[in-house]
Image (cartoon, rainbow, N blue to C red; front, side, top):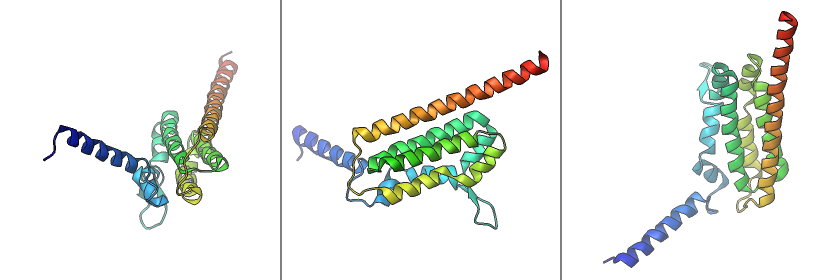
Length: 184
C-alpha cells in the first residue's frame, strides 16, 4: 500500500525521469535526440512538406507563407528557423557552426523577403535542412552548452535584427525617395 509520503516520492521520481528524458538523455543517439525535440518535423514542414508530382523536387511551407504574406510570412518562418538554431545549441556545436547556421537563416530571410525572386530562392535554398544537416554532423553525444555559446548566439541574433532593421529602413527610404521624385 502506498501512503502519502511514498506516493509523493514516487511522483517526484517519475517527474524527474520524465525531465531527464526531455532534457535530452545521453543514452539516445543524436538523431533520436533531434527527433525527440521535434527539430526534424519543423524542418520537414518548412522545407520538404510538398513534392511536385513525378519528380523528387520537394518544398515546404516556407516559400508558400513568404509568397502569400510577403514580409510577415518571412519573419514568422525566420523565427521558427531561429528556434531550430537555439535548440541546436544544446548539442554542443562549435561556435563557427552556430555562426554558419545563423548565416543560413539570415540569408534565407534577407533574400527570401524580396518579392517573387525571394520566393524562388526559398524553393531551392532550404536553410532549415542545411542547418539540420550541420546539427547532425557536428553534434556531440554528451555535450552541453555553456554561457559563451548562448552569448554568441544572442550576438548573432542581434546582428540579424540589425540587418533586418537596416533592410526595412532602406526599403522605406527608397520608397520615400521615389515618391518625392514623382510627386515633388
